Image 1: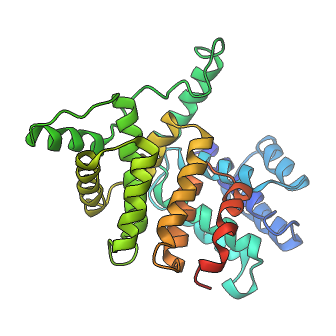
Image 2: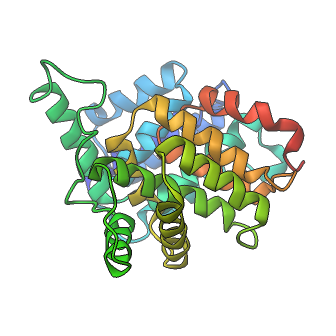
Length: 303
């Protein structure tokens, strides 16, 4: 690993150490051992010590993990970090709920966040400080379909429409959002055994209400949703594209629909809830916001 990657590695460990509200002596010592093993200079320890000196928020820990995952790293670096985190937090039975919560998010990020995503997020930050500094709308990317993370579901929808001799009405940006939301909904439907009648009703109602889709358009989109899940579409890429074209208010509305689909057959499985949590993290939805929505469905979630 490069020196910068080693520092990023230790920053994640320092942040995760605060998951239960306190950094224990053995956790601090483990980070010190790794610092020495990595052969870092004393000056490179300052940002790590700064993280150990005061509590780190859940969102900050997630951001540091994404920073690490968004860097060019040798094979096995992510796995090494995950092993260190799991060892530091102890076995599953002894972990505090907050530690288990953060660990699940870290696992999701390390398994899906790419170097391209990390670079894109850095460039987005640069552009937001320069190009969009004046006259900025709530979501400056709302009308764009980026070339770097092209929405394959949108392209497939257009192909199907042409094959059936119809032209889809509306703006491409609106269809881009509709297809991305559709793919996320399909992932929840297919966590178990695919569509049930009630799940389909919930999804169709959501698509019609949110995007004003007629019967023809909904049928096409449902076909594309099945195909995309069958192709095992990269969830991180879908969420990364969606974050660029949506507001946080829209993402929270989508989170609500994801839960509605999960409980459509009366009870949501643990696997469905885990997938929703992973999606929420990749959509940059904070833990308090996630819990605020989840708690409305608590009595219909498998214990």
